[in-house]
Image 1 (cartoon, rainbow, N blue to C red):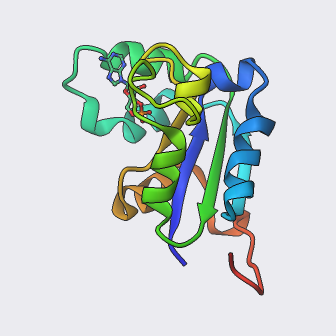
Image 2: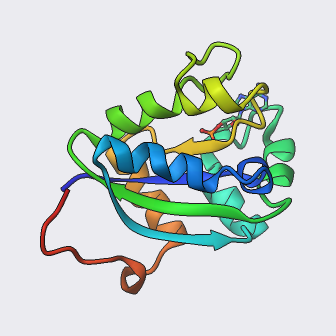
Length: 143
Ligand code: CMP
């Protein structure tokens, strides 16, 4: 079964949106495989956002993502990348459609409630940055 890495960022955790966000993925029929609150270290953040290292907002991004606890998750299901990215909405919340997480709960590009992997390869790298194999649930009946 395909899996992805999703993370409720510090603004989403601070605003008490964990339950609402989880509900959207559960109701869609996806399966939660692992979840935990994490205080992201600078090293973890730099690895997670490595592809943005040369962007002007990189420093701001690291500062924000390490500013408080995030809620890291692994979800599984068919077409998981496409499905979760559609539920998350566009990165820029101003352009994100109503009904999506970012469309409903965010206003700023840099503070946009949720992160989702953009492909299966990134998902595996991001999962390895945040979870050990022992932290993953093993289901008899996959989603
Ligand atoms: P995320 O999916 O976590 O991956 C990279 C993040 O960079 C993205 O969400 C945004 O939160 C952030 N980002 C993208 N563009 C900008 C920008 N122009 N200014 C600040 N942050 C940005």
